[in-house]
Amino acid sequence: MNAFGQVLRAEFTKFRTVRGWVVAAVAATGVTILLGLLPGMQGSCGRNGPGSECAPTLGPGGEVVVDSFAFAHRPLTGDGSITVRVTSLTSRLLDPGPDGPPPDDGSPHEASAREAATPGASPHGSRPAVVPWSKAGLILKAGTAQGSSYAAVLVTGGHGVRMQYDYTHDRAGTPGTVSTDSPRWLRLTRTGDTVTGAESPDGTTWTTVGSVRLAGLPPTIEAGLFTTSPQHAERDGGSLGAGTTGGPTEATGTFDHLLVRGETRSADAPGQVARPAWEGENVGMPGPAPQVPGGDLERAGGVFTVTGSGDIAPAVAGAAGIGVSLARTLVGTFVMLLVVTVVSTGFITAEYRCGLIRTTLTASPRRGRLLAAKAVVVGAVAFVTGLVAAAVAVVLGQRVLRGNGVYVHPATTPTELRVIVGTAALLAVAAVLALGLGTLLRRGVTAVATAIAVIVLPYLLAMTVLPDGAARWLLRVSPAAAFALQQTATRYPQVANLYTPANGYFPLAPWAGFGVLAGWAALALGTAAVLLRRRSA
Image 1 (cartoon, one colour):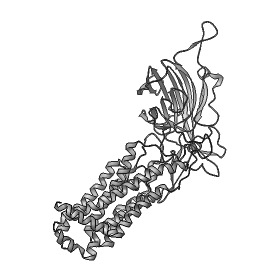
Image 2 (cartoon, one colour; image 1 turned 90 degrees about the vertical axis):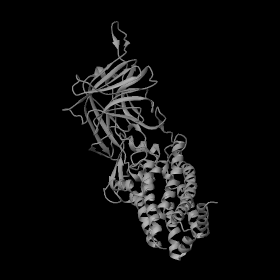
Image 3 (cartoon, helix red, strand yellow; image 1 turned 120 degrees about the vertical axis):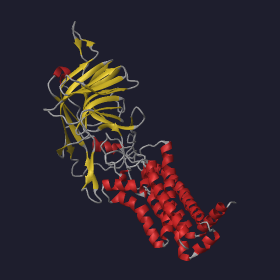
Image 4 (spheres, helix red, strand yellow; image 1 turned 180 degrees about the horizontal axis):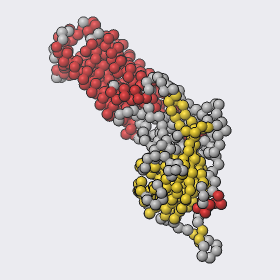
């Protein structure tokens, strides 16, 4: 066995012979698993008999989506176009009543109850508001089934004109809002599988917003007008420890100058043609459908409105979304991080306190090698115990949540592996950082307090009391940035939500966050190695 192997073996023997350290590592593993399996959150998925199972809507790419809106439409066969002028888009926040909104228990059913309020009816009142991602415009859709392929060009409450398609894609057009003094003309044109969206300030000069290919678009699709408005959520109070409030919203779009060009059918009278019939329908939402005067909006002329609630977008986890992410199963990581920090710091400070460090340095005079061996021991112990805890919590924790009726957003196998292995790596590198701080400070109480303040406290503050901006900043620069390894939720700029760390959204990419922690650990351990060589025992 080489010299480093002998030192490594001696340090591991030293670690396993201290019963307190071993018991702490095993207990932390058990607590982390237990917290991931505790039946704390309750939902309604499958809890109310047949038909209550949570079967989320899937988009063309297999992603979970939200697809609910008010729709006035007619069939369009083959190539064609639809044009309309939007003169107004107004929104309001709906008051869910004295009992508040349905509880956010993480199920799509409850999310639909919160989000898809009955259009045009608000028994408990409402108030006008600007809902930035409320939408009104034109849509070409493969069918009225939820999750079917589509392309839309639309105006929004706060993000100007957009072209969106197949739920996850969004392209920006002209910024600004619409009004009777500043209307916006919209047009969608189908040519084969290609749909082109355009806008115009006057109906004469047109600008292309985007052109997309919708593979497999059927010969006959549904073309028409739509309006929708997503769930509203905001911080309550805007101060330390502020909570979250929100509820359903509703939008009303005002349209005129509707024109559809495309295939027509023969009428009963010779020499006449008839247009396909228009109909009003609520897709994925309750309440009265949009009115279609005489079954023909084109012939009706004049001004007409469509009022709707919901969204056409990818589904997200969080205050304005549905369900929870995989990270919910790893709430116990914080406890394990605390134990790892204390044990790793004590692995070196205990030798200074007892005077054993002199004997250790006599037996291993190459101090850098000694510190490296200690780092390997604490890192390996933290990695193995963290790997076991994370694997059990993730695999079984999802079953517990779903058994409690909570909807858990699906994650791919590579993502689950990244979360499990990443959590173990987070704990291992945090252990090395704590060892470095212990070597620098020597004194047990001081070293432990400093390590907790540097490693543990930033995560605790960011998840509990800090405002969102301060929390995101702290999770960019502190070792707690590595918790981004546990993120499985995707942030979509075109989806209204509270994308906060507490909801599972971190400011850095997973491995970038891990790099921040690794940088802290390298700095602490490198500085400790230099000082260990220079200072006397």
